[in-house]
Amino acid sequence: MSGGVDSSVVAQLLNKAIGKKLYCIFVNTGLLRKNEEVQVVQTFKKRLKMNLIYVNAEKEFLKKLSNVSDPEKKRKIIGNLFIKIFDRYAKKIKDVKFLAQGTLYPDLIESRSVTGSQTSKIKSHHNVGGLPKKMKLKLVEPLKFLFKDEVRKLGLELNLSKDIISRHPFPGPGLAIRMPGLITDEKIKILKEADYYFIQALKDHGLYHKIWQAYAALLPVKTVGVMGDNRTYEYLCLLRAITSEDGMTADFYEFKKSFMETISNKIVNSIRGINRVVYDITSKPPSTIELE
Ligand code: XMP
Image 1 (tube, rainbow, N blue to C red):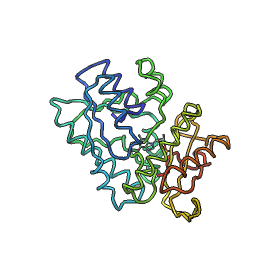
Image 2: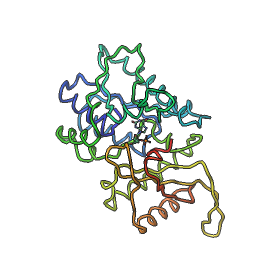
Image 3: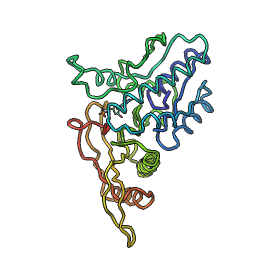
C-alpha cells in the first residue's frame, strides 16, 4: 500500500471483503513527497483502522542508490529492493496466500511492448510483474482492466474520501525519477520542499483538481543567479503540470502568468539550493510524464 489512489482503492475493497484478514505493508522509500508517510499512517491506520505495517527503509534505499544515475538502473534497484523489503515483512505474517496490487490497465500496457520486443519497452514500472517466484503468493489485481477514472469512481462507491480519490498519481520510484543524475540526501530535501510549495500553491489557487498530475523536479544543472547583492550558483527546478485522461497521452497545463510568478518567487526565496525555476511545456508524446 502506497497511499495513492490505486492501492488505497484495492485496500478498501479488500477491507470491505475480508476485514482484519487484510494486512497492508507501507514502505517508506525516502523518495516520497514531504510528510507523505505521516499522512498515510494517519489515514489508514488511525482513521480507517486497517492493519497497516509501516516500514521505514529510507536509509536502505539511499544506500543502494548512491552512485547510480542511469534511469532504468534506478527503477530496477528501487523495484528489487522494494520487493526484498516487502518480502521480509510479508513473511512475518502467518499463512498468507495472496498478494493484492493496484495495477491498472495502463501500467500493464506501458510496461509491455506492443510488438513483444524488449527494446521498445518505454519504462519498467516497478509495480508490474516483479513478484519473485519463491514468494509463492497468488496475485490479486482487481483493477488491472481499469483506467484511472474508473478506479476513482470505484473508490467513491467504497466511501473513500475525495481527498484520497482525487490525488494526483505518484510513481513507485518516487522522487528518484524526478531527480535526473545522482540521488543525494541533500537533493531529496531540496526537492521535497519545492514539490511541497508547488502542490500547496495549486491547492491554494483552486487548480489542483483541474490538473491530472503535477510535480517539481530537480535538474542536475547549476546556473548563476543573484540574491540581494550576491551571486548564487544553485540547482534548476523544473515544474511539470499536465492534463490527461489516462496518463497515456498528456498536455501541459496553461497557467496564468501571475500564478507562475508566485510559485517561482516562493520556491527561489524559500529554498536554499534553487535559484531558477522552469516550466515543462512538452506534451506526451513525444515526452513522457515523468523525466526518467
Ligand atoms: P510516463 O512517465 O511513463 O508516466 O509518461 C505515465 C504515468 O505512470 C506513472 N508512472 C509510474 N507509476 N510506477 C508507478 O506506479 C512506476 O514505476 C511509474 N512510472 C511512471 C507516472 O507518474 C504517470 O502518471
